[in-house]
Amino acid sequence: MAFENNNNNRRNKSGGEALASGGFGCIFQPALKCKNKKEREEGVSKMSIEQHGNQEINEIEKIKVKLNKVKNHQKYYLLNMELCIPDKLTEEDMINFDNKCYALTRYNINEKNVNSRLDRLTILNMPYAGVDLQDWLVVNEKITREKMFLLNEVIIKLIKFGIHPMNKAGVIHNDLKGRNILIDKDMNTRIIDWGLAGVVKDNKIPKETMNRPLQFNTPLYITNFCFLKLICHSNIRIHMSNKIFVFIRFHIRTCKYFFIRNYILNQTYV
Image (cartoon, rainbow, N blue to C red):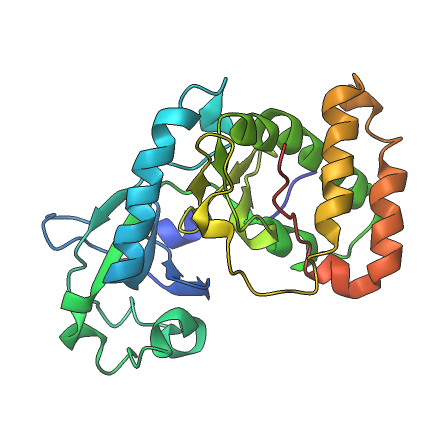
C-alpha cells in the first residue's frame, strides 16, 4: 500500500514550515538553517528549548553505542542527527508557527519574538524518514481492514527486530507511541524522539522511568508485555502474523475509535 508523500513538494521551498509539536520540540520541513552553515540541509528540523535539545542529543550519544550493535539498526532507529544553533527564521519558516508549535509557545516563544530569543533555542537536523504512524493511519484515508492488517505486519516487525533488541541492549525509550514512530513509502518504520530514553545498568530501573504521571494507557503495559513475549518466544514468523491480528483487533474494539486515533505503542520491558 502506498500513501501520499509531500516531501518532494516541500523540497522546492526556500524555507521550512512548522508541521507539528511534540512534548519538547516543534518539527519543521524543510530543515531550518543552522547559524554556522552557509546553506540549509535536506531533511527536517526539531526546534527545542536549549535544555531539551541538549538533553536529547546527549541521550542519543549514549544509546548510539548500544544500538549501533543491533543488526540493521539503521532500519529501526533514527539516530543520525546534528545539533546546532538556529539562524534567523524567515517568513516562510514561521508559517503555522503559533498554531503548530505548542512546545515553544508555552515558553512564550512565538512568531513575533522567536528571532530575538534564538539564544534560548537549538535545532536538531535529521534525515526525512516519512510520516508518523498516527498520520499514516488517519490522514486522507479511511481506516480499512486491509490497512490494519498492513499496520499489524509493520508493528510486529518493529517489535521483533527493533524494540526487543533495543530493550535487550539495555535501552528503554520511555515514550513509544504513534507520533514517535515514522513510516516511509517503502513501509520501513523508525523510532524517533529519544529525549526521555534511558539506559539500564545492572538490571536496575532507569531513573527516567520514575515518578511518571499515571496515564490512561498505563494498563496496556501488561498486555503489550504479553504480546511481545508471544512474538519473541513462540517462533511466530512475520507471514503468520495475520493470526495475531485477532489480538490487536480485540484491543481496537475495546478502546474503539479513541484507540485507533491515538495508536499508542507502550514501551515494554523484556
